[in-house]
Every structure is written in structure tokens, then in C-alpha cells.
View 1 (cartoon, rainbow, N blue to C red):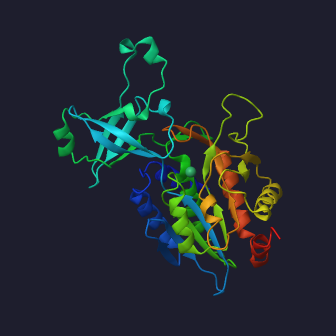
View 2: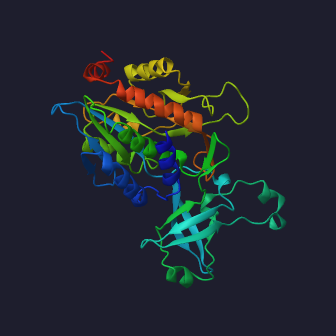
View 3: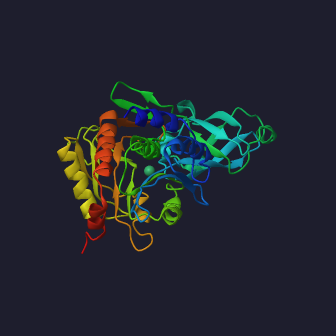
Length: 358
Ligand SMILES: [Zn+2]
């Protein structure tokens, strides 16, 4: 569990949007390598460590998070040195004004900046009540001209990420950017490490995909790369419980999510039931969850001739902002549920999952 929190903090503080995940890739590679028999990667940048079983015909169990966070690319540079931005992933414009950002150039230089907002003194009543369009937002990196921006090495297409350093609000709540989905990356790392001295009756393939936030693109190629028989996807889902409504789905501290339906996948029933029984047996909190969104599971379960797939998500408040908040008890529940789920798997159980809907 300490390792999960260690990796989550380190990973959340890295910057990586879809197609620019190399910081996260390098971290994953460094921390998968000591526990993997083989490191594999695909042409888009997904990476996995393979822990082989003694059986050459063993089933293959895939564990995957996604490396990309929501962010922006530089879309334009105006004459006074302000940058316009193009969203990469889903944003609500109202979360953006006056946020601090980091701009990373193609050659790796990093600049601080902020998204502008017009001071209230200068706003008409109508403008004050209007929703701002992302296309109208401007990033200020301190430059005074277009030439100065170009001289800094900033070009169109460069990565812009909101600053939101990982901090503990107290011993059980974490505030950070990118909990969606460095949580998933950290879980894959923690799982491969946890089973390092355990002889498993299947190949364990743990790692992370790219380009989830733009439509599960890396998951498609990762499924071809890893050829899984079953898959577990770790992701961070939206919580909506801050208003105090007890009936909302997705409550902080209420445990790992039994995500029984979402817009991209209907999970394998045997797997979700097994997750539920695992949590009950080991007295771990769990909560049912329905999502209008999707995860990489949406692509992986449709790969090849069909891959029984389960999500093992936590929820966090304010995801897709600089300031998401998750609960350490949910991380603990997901970590231990995953440890038991994988540790108690065998060939028969995997075959039952494959035949579940027959
Ligand atoms: Zn995600």
C-alpha cells in the first residue's frame, strides 16, 4: 500500500497529455523493469511488464491504467505573446480561468504561466454571468511579443497542463491534478511489485496505455500487443457527493467501485461478482457505480474475439480539473481487493469468466 501511494504521488506530479506521455512512460519503464521478465511496448507508446508463469501455455491476465491526463495544446500565439489553447480531453471551461499552467516545449523546456481571466472591475453584468468559451481563453507565460514566445522555444502543438501539485489535505484525503489516471498507472506498478515473489498460474501483464482521454485509442493497440485472456482496468471515476446527497453514486471513502454499467462496456458478470465476493470476504468497502462515461475497458473487451474485462476504479471529486480529491481508504480498498482478486485467480476461474455468458 505504501508503494501505491509513493507511485501515485510521483506519477501525479508528472505531465503527460495524449500523444505526449513520455515522462510517464519513462517512469513506468523504470519501475516495471525490476519486477518483469520482459518489457513490451507498442507503436503508440503503451508499456507493460510481463511476469511469466512456469506454464508456457498459461492464460494471460492484463492489468492496465492509462498514462494520459486531460490537458491542452498550444493552438495559437498572438502579437502580444499570449497563447490560445486547444483542449485534449474533456474540460468544463468554468474550471479554467486563472489556473496556473506548465507549458512544455518540444525539446523539453518547461515554462510556468497562467490562464487569464478578466478582473471583475472590467466586466459588464452580462459578461460576468456568461460561460466562457475555451477558445477565448489565453495563457500568459510572461512574454511580451510573439517573437519572444518563439524564442522561448514554444510552438503550436506544445503541451499545456494545469499545475496542481499532489498534497495530503489530512491523513485520508489527497488533493492533486491527474488522479485520473495516475491512480491506474500506480496500481499496475504496485500489483506487479506485490507479486514479485509469488508463483502465479498465469502470465501477469501490468502497465499502462496511452491516449485514453481522446477515445480509448491506446487501449486498442495495447490489446493487440498484450493478447489478454481477461483484463482488469484501473481508472478514476467522478464522485459527486460533496453536496451531501446520500443517494448519489460515487461517494468518497465508500470503497472500490462495482461499476456494473457504463457507456463503453457491460462488465463480465462473473468478474464483477467475484470482485464483490472478494470485498465481502476480506471486509473491504465497495459501492455500486453507474457511469455515463467510459474507460479503456470499452476498447479492450471488444478486442480479438472478446476479452472478459472488469474495471477496478475508485472515485474522486473534481476530476478533469487541477484539483481532484480522493480518499486513501478507497485506494486501500482497491489495492487490497485487487491483490486478493489476482492472488486467488487460477485457470479454472479464468475459464469460468470466459464462459460466463453462456
Ligand atoms: Zn481516466
